[in-house]
Image 1 (cartoon, helix red, strand yellow):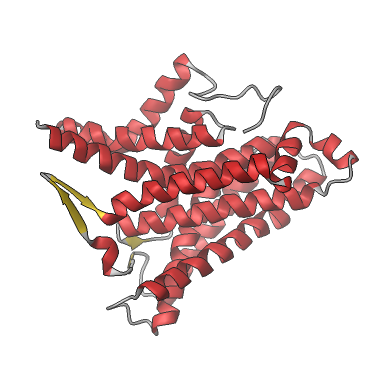
Image 2: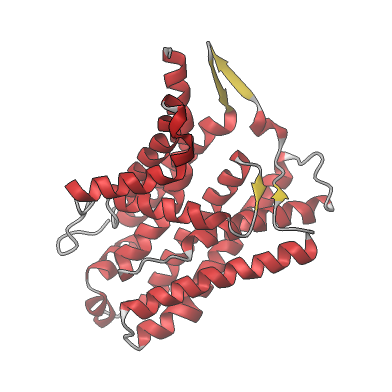
Length: 313
């Protein structure tokens, strides 16, 4: 086992972890504000990938042979906007009525699971009725498939690009939370929602913004995942969403930076262990949850766990 092989595994692990991180941020934002585990979030990621596929098809006349960069970026932009809107719609139609009635948390959790099944069934019907089957190839500009060579290490451009985008988006989210008025309102709402309401702030608009931001990041993560494994299906968000949730918990749910760190760790573990120990390749999907249990045994709040009585995010 040479040094170049180790570097190759590290690069691949961080690329996969970046996709988990983008989705995990949405989990941690919603939990930080509402103490709600939004189990539909993984399927929001699937929606983002499917919408990008649909918009690419519409913009190319369903001729995917040579997708240009302007067309692809336009399609992804539309996908992000529409996915953010769908995230807000799920809050307004499913979660807000329960929150207004002070429903127990278990009702919100069951609702989240119901939304998850609904989105999976909806896009299952769409895929089978209009695209001829569940599994569809995901098309994007050939530039993303180019490979860079650093000695014996081969690195696809996409593998470098995704972690960079993730870190830039992490910086943007932290800037919003700590430097912009709406972000300060989010942190205040997470600390004491009733006091924020008494001060005249519109808590519903703030929570809707949180869902929009988290859903937009999930859409970017979904597109990145679809490009890395160039296919999509209505159930692609189930396991990926659970792993992203595990990443958020490992990093410390409620901490945005922790969610990203947890995603990177999870991606590295999932890629590196089968790489170094090929006989364990069949256990690849289990490593995320084994790591989750291991971390929680020693640090129940996660790596960057937050004392919710003292701080937020």
